[in-house]
Amino acid sequence: MIEEIDKNRLPRHVAIIMDGNGRWAQARGMDRSEGHVEGVNTVRRITEIASETGIEYLTLYTFSTENWNRPKAEVDALMHLIVIAIERETPDLIKNNVRLNIIGDTSRIPSEAYARLRQCIEDTSHCTGLTLTLAISYSARWEILDACRRFALDVEAGKRKASEMTTDNLFESYLTTSGIPDPDLLIRTGGDNRVSNFLLWQIAYSEIYVTDTFWPDFSKEDFLKAVANFQHRERRFGLTSAQIK
Image (cartoon, rainbow, N blue to C red; front, side, top):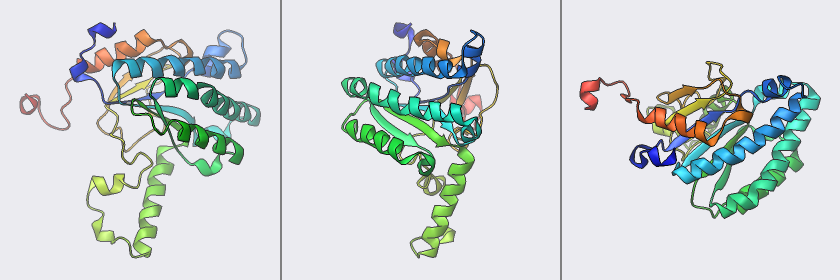
């Protein structure tokens, strides 16, 4: 299918809500953690196809702030899996020229785990291809409130004036995604039609693609279908079709 993709109309940034790991496992009589393990394999193949296709930015909703409220055993297993998987994949990321990035409330990540994640980020910092961003301990409401708080602190310190907050660009400079273009395409696996507190500011004009396929079953072909679907849409950004044409 990759030959059928129009390389001149690629989404520059694809964001994915990776849903369905637990349900995938339960449907097979497995523990939910097995679904998360299998989901890591999907992360690898989708990163590969995104890079091969020419996508510049790929952002994956890996662990939300709400996920901290899950049973402790599942949270501990998830956090351990995330760190182990990233460390294991780092050599391949470097080989494929993929730069790793993390966004989220990292203050809640255990210090040892965060130090290991930071090392992986440093190890891939020289890469110039696809930027793979993992949203860990992330929620959009947290991010927006944090951006407002940091702007207010700058105002208190005399670095900014409240009257300066008149443009999207200034506000976006306080977001964790500063320097990253907004997603052109948001994919959600698992069939639920909601955005689940993910990149609420950034997806204001994103095209949304929902599939019933659980994340562990999401294939390279499924990813290319989503991209092909995106390429057949008309993006108007509040304008009319006539204005776009």
